[in-house]
Length: 321
Ligand code: NAD
Ligand code: SER
Picture 1 (cartoon, rainbow, N blue to C red):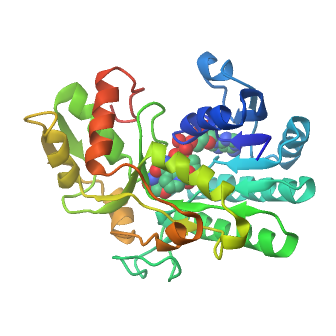
Picture 2 (picture 1 turned 45 degrees about the vertical axis):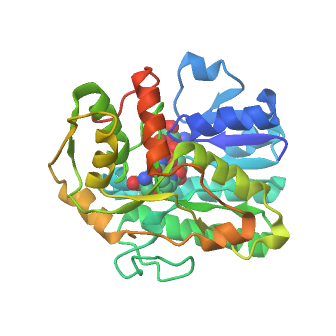
């Protein structure tokens, strides 16, 4: 990777990925793009361009002008928003991926596309969920992610495009807020703990999901793209996880830092249904074996770091705070 273009760079992942890529590969070599204009701070931190990733001509021109050899394709609609507007989710997720893959085929770019635990559904084994297993998701988000994985593998096999990806679990971070997913509670809970000392969770007690702290998610994206291709038996996409959290488990850990922190429940049936259709624990042995994946943060280390940063004013708020 020498010259990189990032789509959807203003979101939860992009706001962490772009600075890290610039640190590693040089500021001017990383072009950040998003469909919306971002804050002056972001735009002035390095090359930035407004780009609709569903517009294949615009993507082609941006890749050509930047002379990109790698695209990190982050633009997408997440699970909860997807259920509110399934046609939008299909359009954005599939049209943008096809555009990025076509441009990458023509201009010989490598492509990173994040997939998700959302590829799994109620028929998948829940604990552990293997790397290769039944994938019949019930959400439109999951359907676009399964189709996306297959399309990426197709472009690799048929056209030799170097496509790679990981199936992220729920991602926890401060800074840019999460974009409307089922796992957003695990971010909201920290903001509410610091601001109000209590949190009302939209998922029910006992709902366990895989999670990961953002620094590890960024290492995973870069790690899989830097991996020796000869060691990769899989491409799209690798299970990766760092911890398994249910609301009451995380609340107990937060209480060690915020005494008296109160957790209550106001369950949203849509997001609860999505969460119940997802794994309790995914098996990331293939990622560990094929490219050395290993997370740094467990629940205790992540919680201490999140609270430290939020208490220092590093948060940007969440959709629900
Ligand atoms: P996000 O919603 O925070 O950010 C998405 C960004 O894409 C936004 O800045 C938005 O403005 C932009 N965007 C939307 N439509 C666009 C378009 N047509 N063209 C260009 N940009 C557009 O999402 P995120 O959490 O940063 O997720 C990035 C990727 O990672 C997605 O593919 C998502 O499915 C995947 N993922 C995220 C998580 C998570 O917990 N955050 C977990 C699993 C997978
Ligand atoms: N965090 C994402 C979501 O809930 C998982 O892909 O949509």
